[in-house]
Length: 75
Image (tube, rainbow, N blue to C red; front, side, top):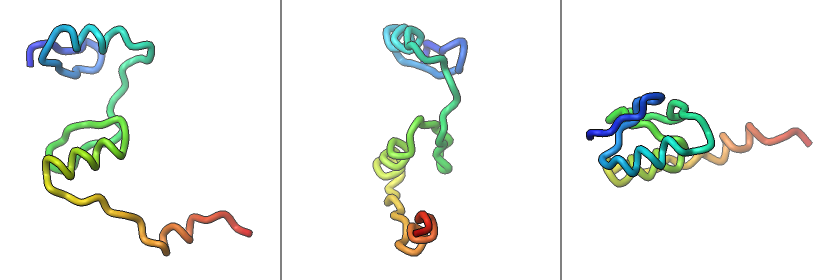
């Protein structure tokens, strides 16, 4: 990859992609979620799991009913 953001060090294959990235209204920030297998970062949990499923063959883990029930608001 030839084009790197000077703020967040994210790399792009094309200069046009870097230009679009730098023109965003929000400032660069580190990824919220990181793949434990390859280290790639993602802004959302859903994108991380899509990456893990397609590149690493993992299946998303659904929360157990007991885990959800313990986080419910009291009556």
